[in-house]
Image (cartoon, rainbow, N blue to C red; front, side, top):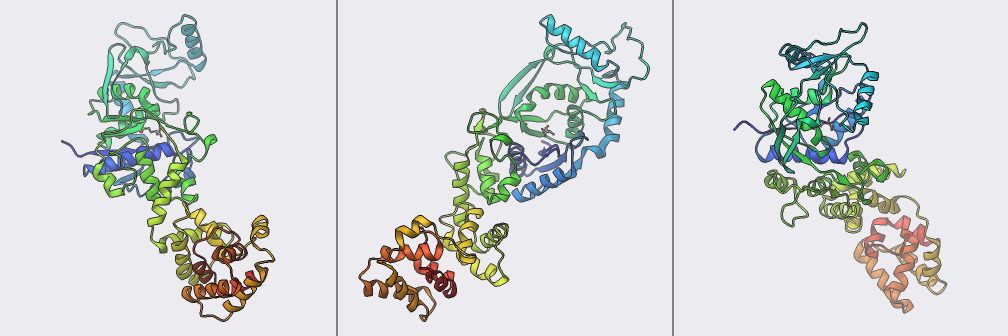
Amino acid sequence: MSKIRTRIAPSPTGFLHLGTARTALYSWAYARHFGGEFVLRIEDTDVARSTQDSVDQILQSMRWLGLDYDEGPIYQMQRLERYKQVLDQLIAEGKAYYCYSTPEELDAVREAKKARGEKALYDGRWRPAPGKTLPPVPEGVKPVIRFCNPPDGDVTWDDLVKGPITISNREIDDLIIARTDGIPTYNFAVVVDDWDMGITHVFRGDEHINNTPWQINIFRALGAPLPQFGHCPVILGDDGQKLSKRRGAVSVTAYEEGGYLPEAMLNYLARLGWSHGDDELFTREQLVSWFDGTHLNKSPAQWDPAKLLWVNGQYIKQADNQRLAALTAQQLAKLGVTLDATAAEQHLPRVCALLKDRCETTVALAQWAARFYADVTPDAAELAQHVTDAVRPAVALLAEKLSSCTWDKASIAAVLKDVLAAHGLKMPQLAMPVRVLVMGTAQTPSLDVVLELCGREKVLARLAKC
Ligand code: GLU
């Protein structure tokens, strides 16, 4: 058996869409599972819509997700010579032909067919046939190249995801494989590439199912070996419609910026459309060892932001504090909070360790951690509820004792106890107002640690506002 080679072939007309990221992930995991190779190809033949910015974003998202490729990025626009060579060959062999029909003529044919209740396919007017006289070549019209699709019979393949699929050749027409400017169309370039690059398995979105019969026919016309195809269903938004920009974030970049961890994203994306028993959380290594192309769902999966958040939270909890601190520092900077090197390297990891059980993204971590570094504005309602005249003297005593005690968790805990005893209070009666004053919220982790990490100076300044 030849070496397994898979690929992902995004068009650089925007960011890396979650759906494409998922098929990239499946292609990558499949290659890794079987000790094969994974190729990245940039399908940039739509010159008007392809941009370098988009290529950069795609590469960044692949890097972020850790989808390392063995070859590429290979750019289709750098392979035009090769496509031309194959086009010439097909024409020479009578398997493709120049078509001079103008858009107006084609429209007219389509309308007439529709009016007769027929499928609006190309009428084959320029298709050569034994004994057929072709129309005279019109002057000044640049031709497209069409592929001689077999007029009859069926195209059948056993889809890795959907099972056997059959589409009749009567349903499809002679596809345009090169435009008037000579640039090949997707369905042609993709075949030449998959052939040249030795691709054995193609995973892609099921919006391409209708393209596959054409591609299979072109593979056959070229005498090229057929890869196996696996068409993954679309990802739906919570309204049951295809996930799209209007329905929330659909780019990998948005999740990177939104404080998600790449391993959580990888886990969630893999599980969305594939399963390994009841496993919800798994490592990259487990995915690779389990992913053999089976157990891919035939029906669409629904994007579930709450579940993704939960998955991310699980990974945040386990993440190394130093790493979390580095990511949180980036998010803090976006909030306008910059830390000096000592704070970033020594203090912030401790803050992250304290908060990571309650924050599901590094954005949430940063929002929380900011209370340790920037001014806090306590919620007015919480202030009124907890910081009452009855408790002010106790807060004042606490401030006094904190101004001179040893600054560590145990000493701070002892001071809190002393103040409770002196004023006959229960812990919440003192802790709540102190939390609101120091952290701006009554919901905080253990108060002694919070105070210790906040630092004496800040704690005293904030308590003084009592
Ligand atoms: N450029 C195509 C896309 O982004 C690739 C489809 C394929 O994998 O064949 O949809």
